[in-house]
Length: 157
Image (tube, rainbow, N blue to C red; front, side):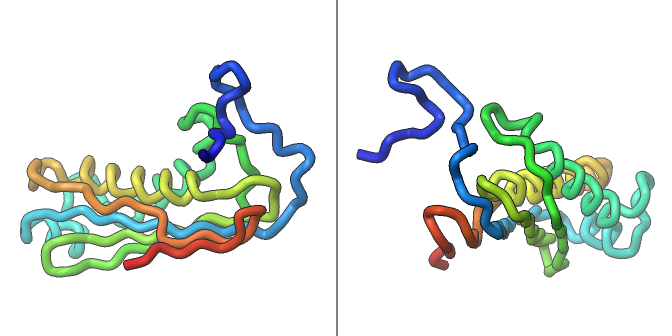
């Protein structure tokens, strides 16, 4: 049975002690999507939303969220991220987001990549909700991670 590292011997929550772990290069990639009506997608694409440039705002929000993951998710270590990217792909009925977070450190950056994707998508929803309140955020997941004790991992599609 796998031992949960965020619990002590008595089952109480704790922050994992990473002080003895070696520093390694770590990267994580996440993705997600927001499905919407054509008029909302068009307004985002042409920049005609009343709130401004949704993609630029969502990109900044995702980056800022990744940097603050340790404040948002209990027991996550605050990390000195070295890179965070948030990219968008517009399709017929949705916008896909892909994120990357990386650093040289003692703990992984999966939560940072996932947080960046989630907050970027939430920001798109917030900016376009006047046009379409039926938007659906889905498929937020870790796609790949590299580095660390457990080694590399990639999602099977």
